[in-house]
Length: 249
Ligand SMILES: [Zn+2]
Image (tube, rainbow, N blue to C red; front, side, top):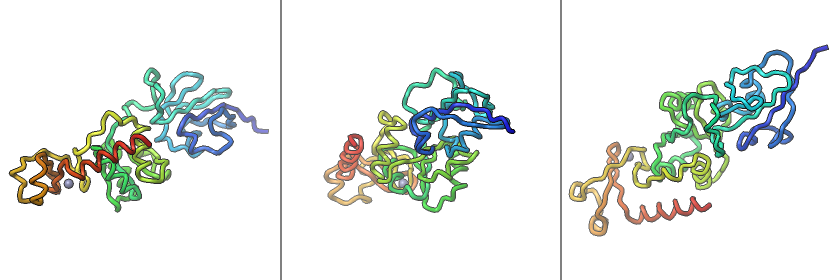
């Protein structure tokens, strides 16, 4: 007869979205036979390891290669947990709160909204999963996706599974979970191509805007990549109202 060992697990906050109903928000027993790492157990439960920021075993921080023992009490915390865990050491050496993004093909509207509030956001509707993972890894970008499979890879170190379905709610969710409130910077990114906007002199772009626009507005910004011009006009007002609205959702 085989002798099973038992450890106790508890997953915190958003990580509960990945695990079965009977195991959510509570401590449960996990039975195992041979040597098994904490990372293997976490992934076998359907939680992408890229979503995990810290693992405590009997109150001590461990890394992913830790082999679980009989009677261990294991707490697993998500990447974007809002409680302060900065005093304990985490499973990763680098900080995870980079605020550059790459989005999967289904999140085009969210990409535009993120640029609208000033975040460096890569998006193309023909990026493959492997391209997204590769760019995410090399450019230290947070992958945003509604596809758990995309995050479940060794190559993914920074990823966030977007829960909301509606783009405005998705934006609100990202701002809240990643605590981006203080970094919102409207009119700093091109909505079309993600270029960093530069302030330009009105006289230099006079011929490129309609006479009405030139008459009523004085501050203009241009995208150095695609040359599109933006100004603090009705577009900016709409954007401001939109931002106020999503922040109050
Ligand atoms: Zn542009």
